[in-house]
Image (cartoon, rainbow, N blue to C red):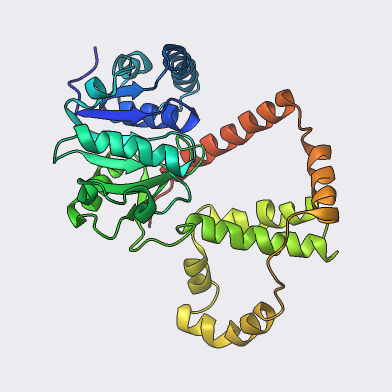
Amino acid sequence: MASPAAGVVVIVGSGLIGRSWAMLFASGGFRVKLYDIEQQQVTNALENIRKEMTFLEQSGSLKGSLGAQDQLSLISGCLNIQEAVEGALHIQECVPENLELKKKIFAQLDQIIDDQVVLSSSTSCLLPSQLFAGLAHVQQCLVAHPVNPPYYVPLVELVPHPETAPATVDRTHALMRKIGQSPVRVLKEMDGFVLNRLQYAVISEAWRLVEEGIVSPSDLDLVMSDGLGMRYAFIGPLETMHLNAEGMLSYCDRYSEGMKRVLKTFGPIPEFSGATVEKVNQAMCLKVPVDPEHLAARRRWRDECLQRLAKLKRQMPSQ
């Protein structure tokens, strides 16, 4: 039997991200209520979670100290939002990335939650000041943005509304740590948060290098997968700088002029259209055809790679 639950977490929305959150919270011993508006969506989500957890247990990759059956016993479906939020300590919204839909959900939740529960959004790009504007419980609201797929990629960006109480961020930070995620505090809201700003900077320069005929699309990806990505899997760009010289001051003293010279050659924001998108698409389709079967197989391969990498990272000492 499952050990006594550590509390109740509500997941609003039973899509891919919602299912991943449900699995993560169950792995931490929390009772999870998975809310959606249609019974079939909830049924499908619970079946998907059952299959995924069974597979993870068989492959030795299930998170948490409980077995798959005990974790599954902690997850239940719910079609009534009022019933779902009763006794909840944390609500994680996972509906589609549509501002008006999310605002409608939060306005509804704002009417029925108490003064203790944390109200959190999984949005990847919508600003807290937009999502939570005018809510009575705004001090309890924040964004907790996961990285897809969240079960294998532990980062969570915590982004407060300007009126979010510091205690709300602290509580959510501790909760994410408890379920094995790696929360980071984004100290103030910024369009794209942190992860996507870094990602878009890489994508933008990658696109320009292909567009200008400097490198092929397949070789560009190789620069990341067999180059930068190798070390970035364990250390970030700032520590990389620190280690690539005799410390940060030494690195900046040696390389700052070269960096500034190269950065001045960066072009304008690409259009991501026209001949270049055709060229990149052709290269990607040669590697992974766009039919559902090939895409799904490649995603499974990606997730297995992430699963093995996550296992290796857990085995490596953090210092």
